Length: 319
Image (cartoon, rainbow, N blue to C red; front, side, top):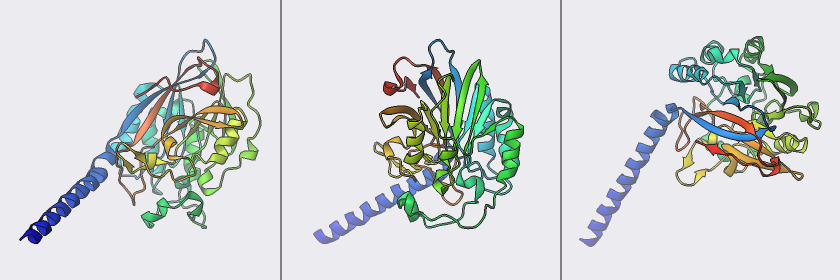
């Protein structure tokens, strides 16, 4: 009789665990993946006396043409009246996504902006063993064939709107009376970064120098910081995509440590430090359309004058 009771209790416990697991999967696939949120972060990196600068950081939309809720949500971000857009790549997931993407950006394309590409601006996502995501980033294999997404069409649309192409390139913009210098790389995750093309100490006459890349690999972060960039922006990680509540992300899909998988942190190299902001992004692969404890996001960074040397700066406010 005792054994039967134990067996019955075990079956009930197993069923309860299974039910909780199924509920978590349903929540991740049906609720959180579409539960977009706007993060707000204050970063003290401007020179003394400068007026605050609002920077909208967008990343990893992985847009499918039918994702009308995401298109509408991004389009509404224009109401924030940002001063600058920084797009850190992985915009597309389908060959017909360029026009829906431009519809999503809408009035944001009238705002000064810069962009870099990620792998899913070049290649469509394909089904693969989810277990490969848990492998170290340098053990993952990349497609040998040529790009199959209309990245050149997207590039032309962005540059025609006035956004600057930072794929292994530099530029300067005048925004609200401030001179902003930028350097960017193409996607380090697929080894398209060529930092040597943009290498060199930042110009001290700029009001602010910003490094931009898609995937926050340490080699690129170190290069930016070594050259004196006080602010670096990246995406790619999806914030881990599947996080453990009260613990955080398990993987970053690159060699960045999990403590910096999303949000604002400090990155140091060769005795220098910079503010690093990694966006958790707004999308997922269509073959893994789930998020758990990691809502899809855009971030409004408010840049303000620095109150301490850059070596000791910290975010003043995160929400």
